[in-house]
View 1 (cartoon, rainbow, N blue to C red):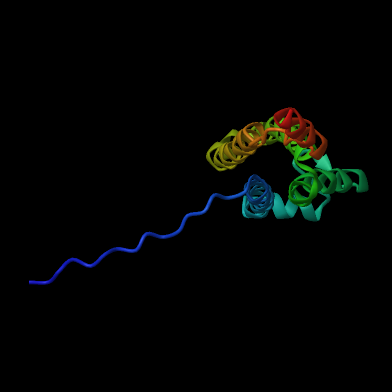
View 2: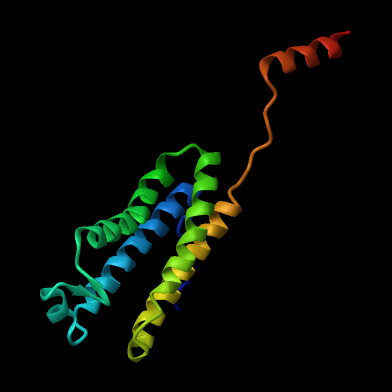
Length: 160
């Protein structure tokens, strides 16, 4: 009869909030891009683009610049989530993720025959933004540490 082998437990260290936020913004960025790319397979989309139409809009420098600015938001949030100081990072993530939710929901408006496709995309985006809001809102705090002058005062009081 064989003796049971001990099963090794995998190490599962906590993930820093910054890393979670960067991963979430990266996921949102890819989701935006891939929903747009996959939408090219809808009948008529490429033909409309070739004649200068996107949805109901004429393809203009203003439209393309607007698209670039909108895509730049999650791109910059990847960088900012890793580099901003904790307090500014938390506030920026709370504000930007809150604004992104209605923007994501706007994508559901339109062609109801593609409701499953756009609905799934929006649902996934909203889940990602909800995670960003949760992680930013619950960012761990540390109690203020005593300064060296505070420690000296305490020592002096203890010695007296």
